[in-house]
Image 1 (tube, helix red, strand yellow):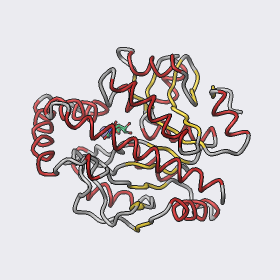
Image 2 (cartoon, protein in one colour; image 1 turned 120 degrees about the vertical axis):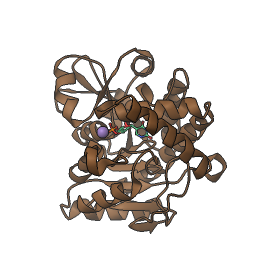
Image 3 (cartoon, helix red, strand yellow; image 1 turned 60 degrees about the vertical axis):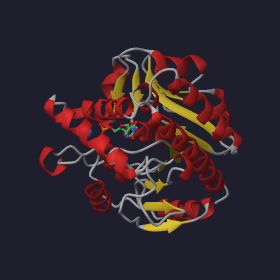
Length: 303
Ligand code: PSU
Ligand code: MN
């Protein structure tokens, strides 16, 4: 095993026995939600994965190790330590060698998952091409990671803080399949709609597993997006979110927020401006993604 990896017994046993495992990210805990909702979400999402037949592996960097699976203390540290670093591919080696605590984004979590041999990852939303990204060149490292690392990412699409059309164009260029899970439309996180289609629609975990196995058997490197819309009863109206997002974007521009601070700033402002009603949507869609990810991980082990 890679000497930088430190696994929980639950994950180690599952991997040794060829049982399904689902990766989870820590940026969503440290930078995506307030305490204590983040720790409640982090615990419950693990239970949902277990209930659906897989072992949960929440991934983060701590004390010079890549943690694959976190115990209660580990989860608490990511949920409630001030100034946890946000780690994408670029930051990974530095945060590890410096012994800092680093919450992994989608890109960094995919790296850790692939090192451990985990094929499926559940999260909320992915990063993408930001609005005005054609000028700022602010394109999330999540997209290039999806092009090179063999991990399927189950998400509720991308928030419309992003330019969803350009995000999908970029994914096409990078050869990343965008699967609509029981949907023909790419979802926009809070809303089930975005106005953009998916590359193809699949309706069962077995079909998704078959596509992934075939892709990887062929040696077509890279992951895939499994876009799973938020359940209708928890969705928010897209027009209400658009007004909030525009205000948050205006504030980010006025305050010259750039680089890795952009996404956490926007997420934080959206939460404040919606008075927390968006937080429940956010949490529920993560639970739904965890369930679907576990089902896909189970189906992949049967292939
Ligand atoms: N989008 C969300 N919630 C999140 C993120 C994105 O709706 O928590 C986090 C994820 O960890 C994602 C990261 O990988 O933000 C992308 O950051 P950036 O835009 O700086 O690449
Ligand atoms: Mn960025």
